[in-house]
Length: 449
Image 1 (spheres, one colour):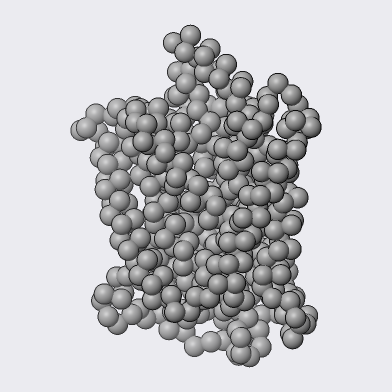
Image 2: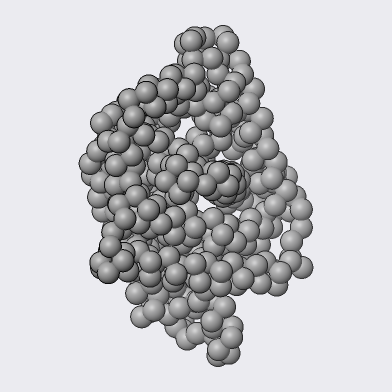
């Protein structure tokens, strides 16, 4: 065991991804900042839209269940990571943890494929949404201006390239603290705007009815579940825990409590206020409901403008957090750990590879302005396996609870239920993608809802 641990340490010393990108220097509150940025993002403005596919009772119930299951899931994942660290098998990557515990080489490639899909998807989505934010502000200042969506996406990409040069995940800690504050800020503003809209004379008529056809109602419900999975998911918890200074035992749980305190405040307030005002007419972005294409805004312009600025600023942090796995993959072999992180030998390859990665994300954001539909599919086939199924399986394989125990049956039930929900959610999301296909136009300035 001691020889294996030494061999692993020697291998990590030659690993640029471990030594630089996933540098282990953080405290528990830094992990809380990272985790909050990974989960609490502008996707919470989609919660009223998810609610409209399920209604009040089932919607709030599913929101609560998703919150409890993901907290439980991340708690189990943290315990598995702590157990491995205490057994001299510290893992800093999700793919290596899954391959080690499950003893399967294909699991390594399965996880890396899903993580790549999630992380690149979020990177593309962050750039697209940030470009939309800039376009909204520009269109209000200059309604007939010549700039198109892809121009703003190019501007966002340039800023992302600059931020991508921060060498380590740990170096994002202050940015991610600001991200947490921005999330609280725009949630408060949006909730206030919804209350203002709902109590004003211009309040829209409220209708909370679901689709009359049972089949359409079922498809909408499973699509909403996929959206909730994508909103609660992150898929990078082991990489976030890797940034903690060892021993990491117990620290991640504190970070989780911090994160879920923010989740409780933001998710419920945004979901309830938005759905209360707009009901089954809720847009996939509640800001669009508050700023209809025809007619005046339903809330003060300065409130909505400030909320959009906070969303825009947070998106830069989110794009960088989800790019860290790509960076550590690139720098695992390209970096030379015998030289400094800012040495010419490491600085030039880092600038080249990260710039190329961000340019590719920006290109796909400009080319695919219907990325919202694609993200529903990513949520079903990406976040559900990594955040709802694998943690339970890893815990059962690591701690081996008796098959007669409550823990074993809870974990097994979650695996079965969310496997089925993931399959139905993927089918429903792909169905919506096909139904919206006639609206898709490459490099369009019109984003498909």
